[in-house]
Every structure is written in structure tokens, then in C-alpha cells.
Length: 327
Image (cartoon, rainbow, N blue to C red):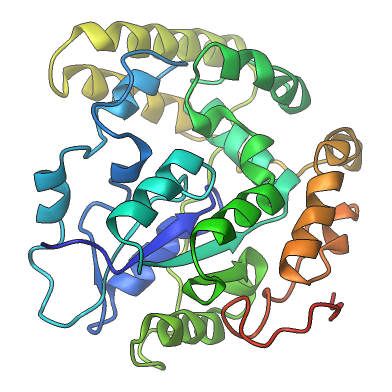
């Protein structure tokens, strides 16, 4: 069997694509050639309906066991094998599937300020022409309705950022020494140190990879008439795509997405007013996260994202002081 030894399991919009690329450069690690196979998200074929663009995304899932194992066939003997699907941490059924199939797997989790993460997530879908709501806060207010309608988890802007509940559940399934939790800002600000932390946790030589590739900056198209027209075409094309076989629909929507991205400004920063509107959704979970990890996350309640430092200097649970409070 060729199955992963470790998983970058969380969270979306927290540098996992860049981390996957960086770890792929390490000769002592093997990363799946498909960055996000999503194998553990379903116990069989993915759903046949969802929110805008979800069905086309579901077609990318590698849900067959033989196809999934084939991703790791080329790994040299003895080299730790890994993949990166940052939705795993959020999905309790996925965590149980991981525990059942690869109970000794190590999990790497990158945490980002939950409001900033949600905003980046919304911008990603807005810039792709899939998000119909032009106002970020109002889009978050639509979350419960969208969940009830069966929209995929990538639309769960605030739910994906409730890390306390997610990690609390993960620790009920996996020993804490199998889970490494880091902060996104540390990955950005001190990539060499953070990569050494991750490599040591995975049992690979340190000092080999020292840089995180620059991530593509998501464009932020303005809410103009041309954008509304192109975005509507994108959503209609994505909805109709379920009727077309193979990659035909994806190719058509990709052209529209390139038009939407062309010459657009970079993602606009959050205002303090927007943060204030969203922070109440996270306050209780941040308190739970502090309890679960024994760390201070009070900086996430401040006006701007600047969460320097990682969660602990070792895998969570290995000698950290429960009452250690650091900013």
C-alpha cells in the first residue's frame, strides 16, 4: 500500500499551497503531485450538487482508493509521503476516515487570524466570479442558509475559522504528539525557522528548504457592470457544467475567470468596522482554542491581523505549559 505518512490538514487560505510547494523541494520528503486530492472528504463519489462551481470542483476529487494510492507510488523507499488538503481539519467525517485508514499519520495545521482567513476566502470566490454577494459581511450572514442548501465547505467562511472546536475534536482522535500547530504569520515572517520546525516534526533533515514560494495574490475586481455580467456568466457556466462531460465546462469557465482577474487590483484590506462585525462570531471559539492549546490568541481580537509567533516550539502536547501566555 502507498498511503500518506502525513497530511497538511488545515486550514484554507493559510499558505498551504505555498507550504506544499516548499516541502516538495525537500529530497527527504515526497509530496503528492496533485496538491489537494481531497480523498478523505468523502467515503465514495462526491456530491452531485452544491453552490456555484461546486460540482466542477467535485470532479477534481480523487475519491477512488487505487487512484489515491497511485499518487504515492513514485515515492522513494523510506521517504515520508504527504499531501495537502486543508479542508480535512474542518470535516469531522474526514478526520475519522483518516484515523481509520492511517491512524499513525502526522497532521500539520496552519492557523490564520479567522477574520482575515474568511476575508481571503470570500475574495477568492468573488474574484473567480462565483460569489454572488459583493459585500463580505453580508456574504458571511448568508452562511447558514448556504450550508442548509448543501453548498460545499469552502463557502463556510466563518465556520472554517473556528479552530478551537476543530482541534478539540481532532485531539479526541489523534494523540497530540501527532499534530503540529503553527501560525500563518510565522510561516510568512520566519520561513526558514518554520520549515525546519515542520521538517523536524516529519522526520526529515532540517536546513534543506529555507524559503516559501510567493503565493499568487488574489485580485479584487471592482463591482462594475462588466464584472457583474462576467460573474453571472461564470455562475451560469459553472451550473451548466454538470451537464457536460470531462473538462469542457472547466475550460470554458477558466477563460471567464482569466477575464475577471485581468488587470484587477490586489485584495483590499479589511476595515476595522468589518472586523468588528465578524469578531463576535469567533470570540467564544478563540477562548476554546486558548484552552485547547494553552496559548494566547488575544491578538486576533485586535484591529489588524498581526499574529506573530507560532503555537508552541514543539508539537502541541509535548511539554508546553498550559498557562503559558504569549503574544
